[in-house]
Length: 176
Image 1 (cartoon, rainbow, N blue to C red):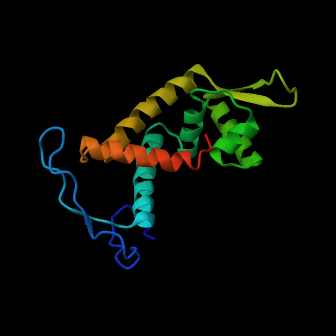
Image 2: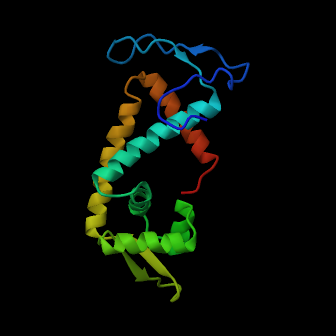
Image 3: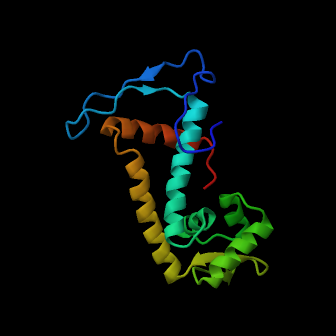
């Protein structure tokens, strides 16, 4: 599997039933011709390459705000909920000690706060501070711009189809 962001040919790894090229719709919403025919990289390489592009966009957004990608994800998860540490660890795919360290660092930056759970005295809830909410808002807006830019060359119909397919994949593996 490629380890950088440059598209590579995967003809040797591509399934024999995959089409050689995908012809995008000929005209996009502005009436400008869409990109030329695109080689089908196959499901594995296509999703891996797309993941690299999205991770690079998120990494850029995080770095612009002095955050790691996992810290950006933490703020994103906390935008609309106040989970306990265990639930938060599940959302982020981290073990207990990694979760504690992540929250400790965010707390030192005054981005999150811990409060006692009203239902379990042994548990704490994690929420965003006002500064954390503002940084989460900024990060989400910039991530939105960066990720939309990745699909800017697609037609409206292609973006809609990509959104539906990605949503179906996510729904099949939902963790948040």
